[in-house]
Image (tube, rainbow, N blue to C red; front, side, top):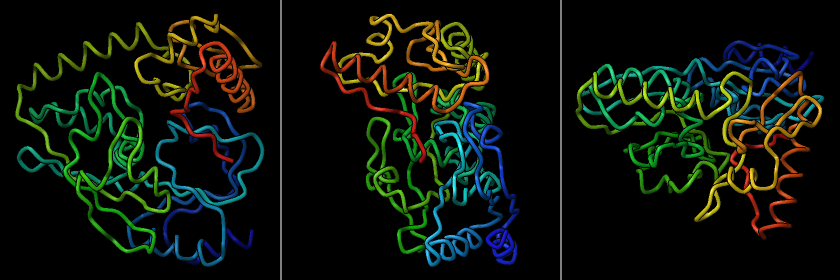
Length: 298
């Protein structure tokens, strides 16, 4: 408990020891984290990261846990949650928003303010920071289309603002994925004026389509694999007969083959076993290396 007390003494936010990762990931799987810290300010984040780096303590930034697979057992480090960094302000056609703000909530706020451009985000369960990190997207749009600039902590823990171009957005990746020691703090998004009712109607239509095509009734972390160029991961997986395949408590969705669901008290190892089996057989059959859209955390 010495580390816990040291973190409490730093006064950087709420400190919770021995946290079940099932409560903080959308898969509802994983073991226990040694410590979870809810950061209360950017200064607190800098202070905490300085302490962790100085003492060589393993750590990871955690948003909504909507794209992560924590292994079973102990995560022997500190998880840092940014969900208390959640200020948002709409100014004309621009939105300034902190990294911990809910992406789904932001899409709804934008729609009600008659701003179009965020409709794709209505069904993405992560935070703004997580969405920028992986350049989240759907319906042929993504964060790269709407981010004007991002304020971050760089590798030296200095606050710095970078442009859209410097964010290096590409399909499901960004500057932040390439530089994991940098932390997204906030962003300015540029949207366009639209008709609120029309925008909300588009979002409702897409919600209906998601309910029909995705296993939203079970815990998951969305799409497991990135689509390979010129094809769809779901099509490849389905062609090999994986729909409905069970391993332990995890199952390849019968609705969409690129989703693995927590069918019944799954372990992280169940999900990971299915992932590796799919990758192996897609490679063997098609010569294609399926790349994870999700992240397995050691």
